[in-house]
Amino acid sequence: MKTTSDLISEFEQLFRQKLQLNNCKLRKKRQENNYEIITPAKDIFLMYWSEFPEVSLIYQAVGVRTQQTSVYERAIRLHISSCLSSIQENPTSETPLLVK
Image (cartoon, rainbow, N blue to C red; front, side, top):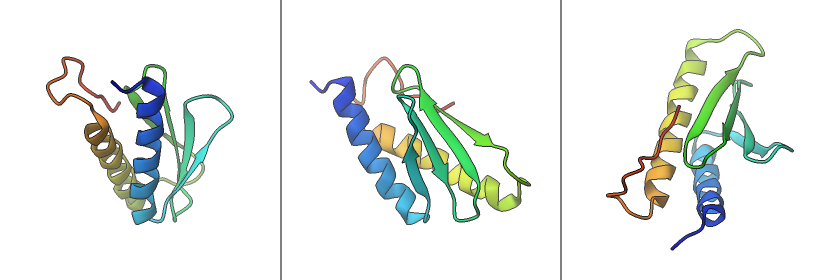
């Protein structure tokens, strides 16, 4: 059985690979379980969790939110869901993986 830290490490590795497909950068913040995602359009999203795998993603308002921002946000949310699904140990688990 995998530990939470193993799952987080596996999630982070998969998520970094998916973000590279969109030319986005993932930067781990000083606080535990906090990450910054920077898109090529210089949009910034913050990803964090208190109880993994319930991952939250919020847009950091640093400029004008454009249609392109929404496209990146949807892609990032899909990447999060995909990565969480792929690391889920038991597909019939009673605790679903959530993206807020």
